[in-house]
Length: 237
Image (tube, rainbow, N blue to C red; front, side, top):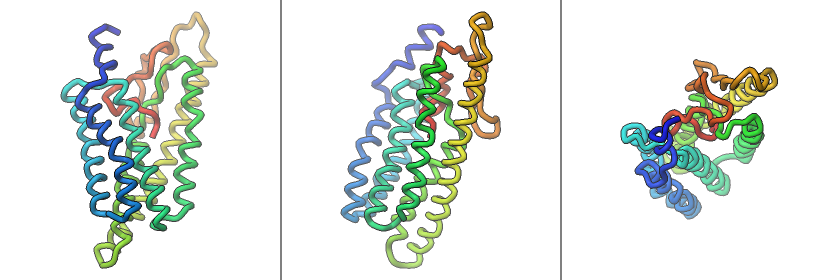
């Protein structure tokens, strides 16, 4: 890889990274607003988080400002918002404990994947499946709707029903993505076992084409899986 291609990956002070950092700073603010029941302000923070999540990926591609830091900050912000929302809504008895357990268990289920990938010789992580992104977005839609559903009136009732629909779909997609990540990891392990020093680099098996963006079939074992755009090679969601 040429220097021109590597340089953008190492940049820190970029517009997309600034948006991701701002989104991270908003996590404790959002949790505090939920706990004091300032729901409309909390929803405003979530709207900003959602818009910045879309905008930082768009700007990363348009301005050619993809970076390794961005691939870490973006999924970290999403996870922290989901965690903060789970904590806040559970304390307020808006969502049941079992939903929290199911979602947290999914995170523990994919936890061993990263060390396995590193042990196989890849410095990065698996490409993010579209299924995982879709699950995350469903949950990010579900929680503010459930927060609105904690009030009185017909609009609140409609928000609660819609919110639970998104929550159920999001949880299902979240676990489906976990299964896909483990399947891709299994393919990498099998490919590694079948390789020999004389056989050259082992390509990274891509995910199901119907599931989302896959890895570059020509990737080298001594390099990270392809980064793609800023949202293309994050920690699995």
